[in-house]
Image (cartoon, rainbow, N blue to C red; front, side):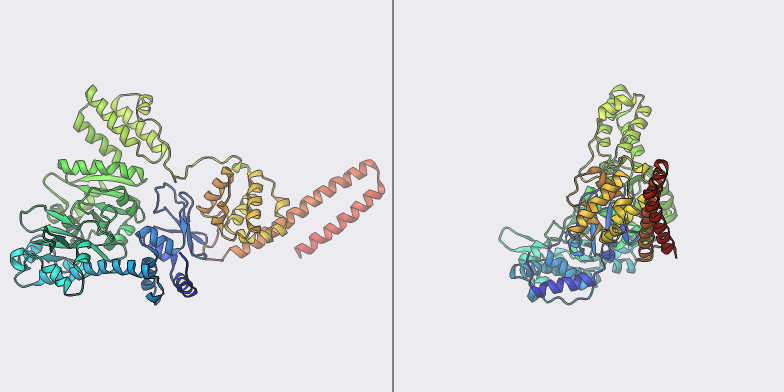
Length: 600
């Protein structure tokens, strides 16, 4: 996409105003590592953090899957937005006025269309809230919420509403209200709020239901969930997918609860909206619920940016067991720690917390079973430990093990399960078979010769990797002559080649790099706290470290020159060559004076 000078200026203004660490940090747990921030990539599964955010350069880079870009790239990929929408969102967030007239006609049309869908949903929230407050229409709905223990502040916080019955408001009350606000029937239908009938007209999708607005991670309403009043079917109904709503990615409550989840470093997953609200009423806010579907891998990926552990808080009935078992492969595949807490028979989270209180929920969560143990026990109960039962268990565990993201976990689980089943580990591994690492996974493997690299060489190379823009000064100080370790020298030569081509950012060092050993070392250094790191304040140590390294290089060069000169002096003495000896002694005197001057 090409930009006019005005558009370029607008984009740069927003980029300068936007704090990329703040934007990404809302979705990824970031930790400072020297002058950068690192975390686990939100775009692929990984065990160790390889996602780096550079606040000085205002860009991010993942050394595992290769995703990189600026704040616009992140917003577009994470939120599934087109550029104009990402531009508008960041402009609103950071208070930059965005003149829409600078967008192309097609961009304006696309952005306007999505804005209309968002507006339709937002207007629907107001209509549903008004219906809930209506003296007659909302009476039964308000009574129902009171019986479920939903206080007014929860109703307001989650913006609950009510879709009235046909007898109260007719077939198209919401559609008529939105049409009065100049929203077309096509927009209302695409937003999932209305359904087209056989005659070409439209009727409201939701009727006689408590309405739960569903937010995306920017806080905009993108869909609704509706819980029927009474015994009608389906019990829960969600909006269909639309250009702004993808149910396999969004979780009810994640936008409202993300800070609580991040603080607890744990997400509780429940099956129903009222389960979530009841826990929130009792002060348990680190909860999410899938939107009428089983927990998906993309749901796990969304949670991974906020916590390290997921606890499935499900009913102990057959449906709950089945739902928990379906989740396990996704958690293993995404390297998420997971446990399962099954509620006592006859309870769901809503009834349990209202009857037993939040302390009982906390106790249940702390006692939750690890995923592998839960899976094994469930399979034993289902199949038994007869010969045929064991064979079926091994077959199902084989599929489960294939989802584990790292070999160490697969080996540990294989050994553990084989002991429980009374079969040899070799037999179990043969059944499960080796699983190739998933694309984009950073594999941990030893780098030959690193242990032999001296402390000073390692500090020098690590500093150079983080500051390739300082190559020229280090080169002038004698870096190539001093560094002797083969791997360190390969890295210095590689950085030098790219520096001469204009490389000034660490992430650019992976460009045109075919040497796997050098690549592995650079990736590890950029995703770990630098060996030279001291004070974490930006710029606090870099200048001092640069001076120290240059000083060491000069001293080391002089030391080596002196050692070489001393050998030549000794050789001249053995040969009795007085003329050469006197010349060399003169050189030694000059070198000693130079050393003295350097130390003063």
